[in-house]
Image (cartoon, rainbow, N blue to C red):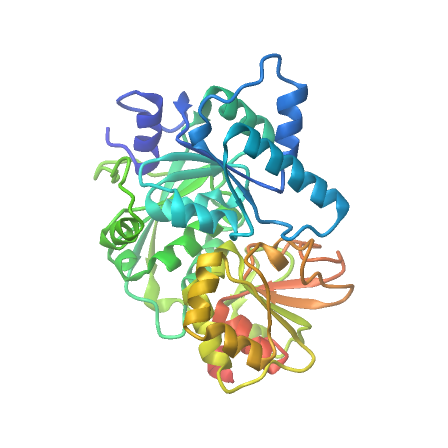
Length: 416
């Protein structure tokens, strides 16, 4: 029987020839990412719960301070210091102020065929490079950190066969929100979402990261994309080689299969308070906004900033709107500076922030108050995600967010 990409990666990590959905295997983890959201808890358990604390392979660890940067309180500062000191003591690869964890991992670490645990739910973004990335809690992270291993229940796979090409003014963000709306927030619970087909070849690496990143919002255990020339060129530009180049077998067994015609996708908005509460963006036209956010691990890359800057050029942010623009990494920020994008944002009245999670995390920058409405390229729109539990968060593409920031109400770019 043939195997899917997810099954092949798990089989390789388990050191066996074949696995099937429903099997449980002990696996060797290739890489372990953790950020300042929970690393302090892992450190506490390391010191307080282990009889013989040690790290199996420090070269596998990547720790990134990105959620509350710079520190917003003495409590956060203490948490950062704990993380910083531990990383220095043990020689752990450590980033602070360099950007959002998943963007940094894609830029500097992820390789096709790897099995990666991340102490953050959006670790599934790494599937854009054909890696099995999955989010884990502190206990599972600590176990893998001290043993180098873990266990995995082999997930079933849902296959999405992409055809066609996205229309002008429609983006990968619209595509993945459409898919989540179609299958539901629980539609891929503990399953792998696999993407392939001729349509995939039309998508950039930025597009692919955005799609895989949001798959957890459909409950997915991981997301995976076929590794083609686009992915290989990205990898070569960054001086990395694949660990494995896996593709699903023709006779692989899927839990479900979907055909998705990219040419039929339209601008989408996810309404409060669930990511699968999606509608055509035009249905939200005229809804007043107080704040707009362009950034996050989903839509804070250079391509997204270009989209926003192109719309803003020669225009102004609405006087009653706070428009926060947050590059996903320092590398993205530097490139945006060189291209003049940052100047366009600032001249238009946007607030440009340092590279970090910012508004998406909803605890340090751009927090919205009671009764306020935010339109965001962040990852979630749950109640209270960006501040007050009595606020409202709409999710949309970089184009729709920027257009809305200009008009002061939800609108699409073609309606400006």
